[in-house]
Image (cartoon, rainbow, N blue to C red; front, side, top):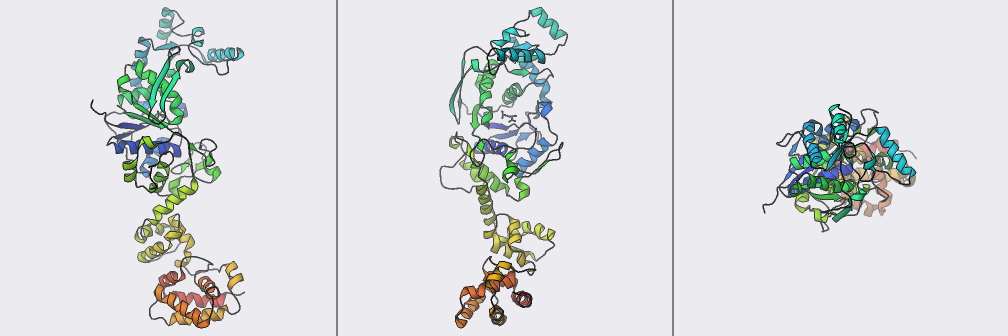
Length: 510
Ligand code: GLU
């Protein structure tokens, strides 16, 4: 049999910003598609107009772009199987709902909201804890299974409000093999007669999702675990519509858990726990409420993806750093676990650090420049590049280089109080002055010569490191700790260093 072309879809509902878990779902779909030379589709599932949030679709596309997942087919890029927004596919669904009615797999239901509430209350009073419209209760309701055929016709012709429901068979086991969970079997007695087609003429998620996956020739449905309970219904729909052969394979991804493992990482956890849960910033158009994103916090998309990839998947080796291309090559659904994956913010920062360190000073310099500009600082490109190279080991974000190394761009405006209090002794000014004069006499002001000069000075004066270095450092940088002073001094240059020492000697008072 010819292998089916791999076609997967990421199918978010535009109800708000995309949660990190959604981005992971997109990423696994993308990696799987690319690994198998297949197609990655973006389908916007906007059948529930009441939950539509303006700007959400743009947000999703922008976030996927930032994460470097290129979309092969979708509303933003086009394709042969469009439209890719369900609201624009509206006319396509009705015929399948009709087909299900004709084959006896679905029926019309005319119950009003009041009648539905009444039924639920009646059932509750009879001791049923979560009453459903199902094989038992449907017989007492107003639908095409209970009403005479002529009345059904009359109501339909009169355009009476109605929905179409699936007729769940009684006591049948629906079985399918999930790539991650193995065999799943659910008895139809536990599934209700879900609405497939609403009174507003729109399909529900369940019908639209199945019809679209079929029409778009989707080979694998890779989605969050929260959809596992709906999968048996979807399987039944494929069977009832005569599409069993074309049914995609399912893979339900494990949950992303809060850092303490206590439940699902929710949209609300983010700013509350001090880390973003969204890929990029989002402002709620209705309330104006803002939520922070990884992009604006200064994370690299490569680091964000790498971190997400490991939330549920592992390569089976000790390698942790993977470029997108390496992820594509290494990824397999077989290595996605069933257990929920705890989100680890420290690890996220670690990934960013690694991606920062991988870059050379020249690559980092242009990233630092905007931060310098907004601090009204400037320097030559090659100088900025050298600062970046020297400071990158101490940074998680590129802006940390400025935070930690502001003294590279301006003379200290204050001196670390703790260092002064503890290390600036009576004889310190004298010692620093002597060191200054030795440095001034150096023919070459490179890190090595500075180091050698410093060492020789300590030996000649029989002084300990602690009697000289803190004073030297605080004079030049204003700080009590930091990168190697030899490197710092060499980069600043002789004139600047001597100048700073002179100012410090005049300014620092105990
Ligand atoms: N629209 C659903 C969601 O928002 C998609 C579920 C699926 O992938 O089937 O998550």
